Length: 312
Image (cartoon, rainbow, N blue to C red; front, side, top):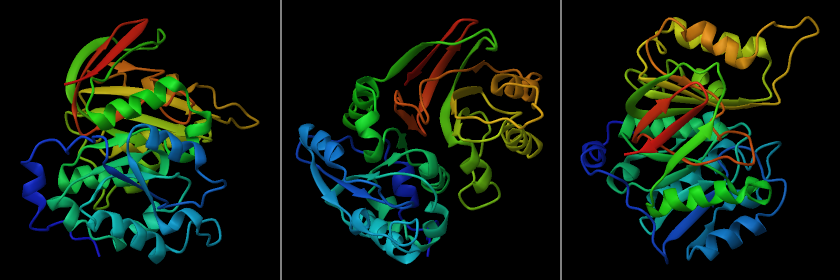
């Protein structure tokens, strides 16, 4: 079971950054959620081209209904790499659904004593929030092996830069729905559906004075509205330092239109709060899914037409 009060908790929170990767380091690939549809040939070759030794978990070839093995099997695969000090990073092969079914079977006490990078997005948001809330750990919201064949070269390079400790900063075009302003704070977040699913649990975030990043895919407009209003009613949006909205892709509407776009929904909910808001950050379920080091302090500058986000 989870041991969030392990003796190693203070060690991680006072030790600073997780060590960046260097050539020759081992990176493990595991599937904590849905099973893989195809071999990860491109992703393995990419990681090896960066000088990394790739170690494959047992889950990459496993199948149990829609999952990469049953819950115990997936948890054991994650546990293996958490406990192996020679593994310097763990990348989730894909998202889908299933992390919530196995996370409480994993003991993260060794992670607290010997932290390593955790990479992924979508369903992996639950691991991002859990590791930050309970261990103060930084993690990487970025491309996963299943996405590599369709990923933009730029997004792949941002993953390399994040893993190897190179500078990360972004300037991107937005639109006039923005709420201009400047802010600094620790960036947290990920997939909106998973942020809502973690609410009230041991993996829930403290949103106070954070810069929140959100993205999602395949949701109905009314569902986006409902999830954001739930976070707002829970008091999670009023004390942010800033809000960064990424890709909301394949969003659906009902036969009777909802009447607002995603950006209009967002601004209708947070318009009374005094922090900058920007849209169209290039991250999420898109080919140009640029990496974010969650849990790290960032600067955010927003005007009516563009925005800049940089890591401290």
